[in-house]
Image 1 (spheres, one colour):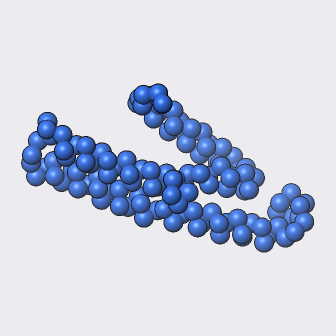
Image 2 (tube, one colour; image 1 turned 60 degrees about the horizontal axis):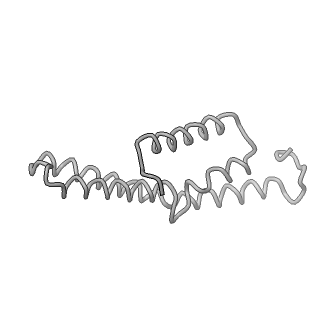
Image 3 (cartoon, helix red, strand yellow; image 1 turned 180 degrees about the horizontal axis):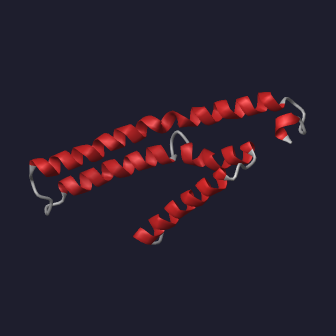
Amino acid sequence: MPALTPDAIRTATETLSRLTDYLRDSPDPQQALDLVEPLLDEYTGLPVQLADALRALARAVQEHPDTPRSLEADLLVMELRTAAWEQADQHTLHYVLDDLRALHASACGTEAECGPCR
């Protein structure tokens, strides 16, 4: 596995930005849901991964010997951990995708070329 670099992370965020631009152009809902689905997977999706990364960052900073031992540092680490919990709470967004798929399917019925699906 190649070394992780800030440029590799920037590439990932640029991909998310491209996805956002694509979604703003009103794509087919099924394709849009398919593209977003990996981001909201309940086990490996972005909320879970970002929460894990924030917790790992908090631990790395707190445990590093060069980190000042101060109230300010403790509060900043606590902010990272709080943000991690808030992100982790979003892991249920995958249910929204399931509900949107069901809603879209019921609106389209069983015909491939029905009203809103054309």
